[in-house]
Image (cartoon, rainbow, N blue to C red; front, side):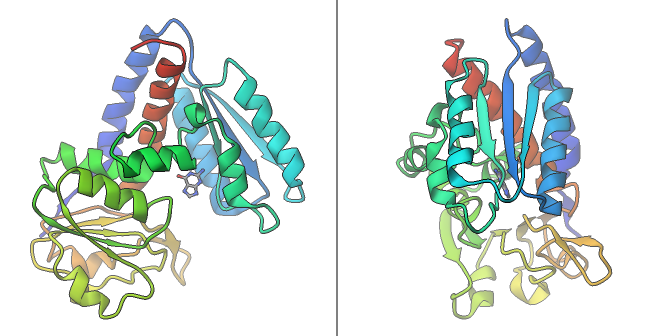
Length: 281
Ligand code: GUN
């Protein structure tokens, strides 16, 4: 039986600590979230970020732009917040509507305010082990593993999914912490052979209940980044929890696993960015 990695409980604990830290600051950090269009899932994520930010004393502004917004209009808004001395964190919710070039938009955010850690400069710093601001989901996962006393050093960690947001930065953080990393993706042959080697299995592929018992070694630590709706409209992860939980030593649930940790990391990084920008250590 796998012990539950309770992201919700740890996130609540860390957010209380962060609130105390924010109260000691001589200013209120400010996080700006830009949302383009009306993607239902994105709207929920953004609302959750705003609510959590306000709970810890971070000023939160959501800029909700229509889906027809032009690249020039979006770049102008980003630029306005880049120049705003009160803004510490600036993120653009992904995915963007198809006519907007994601790479160009992400690159326009001031790297010092890029609390998502998506800017090529921050991605490069992560690659070379000089982390400044790093993507929230992988950071939250490392915090969660650490809290439960799970060391990745010397272990085989298999990452399923190679997105810039989760898979790639996750692999870098695992490497930095001395794991032996196996990167897998949609073109991987014999995926189950790779996942069955894993002492730590991180799954971020966006396919509901894809990872069944056949993919998991007995005693593995299983981290599920997925958020999918099944045929009945129920929220499910990328892991078939019912099948895999009895095999795992530790496992994250969906919901209340990785999701709350992602938001907590975003808030932590907003406070970190604010302190660096404003010269407080
Ligand atoms: N879309 C899915 N995850 C994320 C995230 O962590 N940040 C942003 N900006 N968009 C996302």
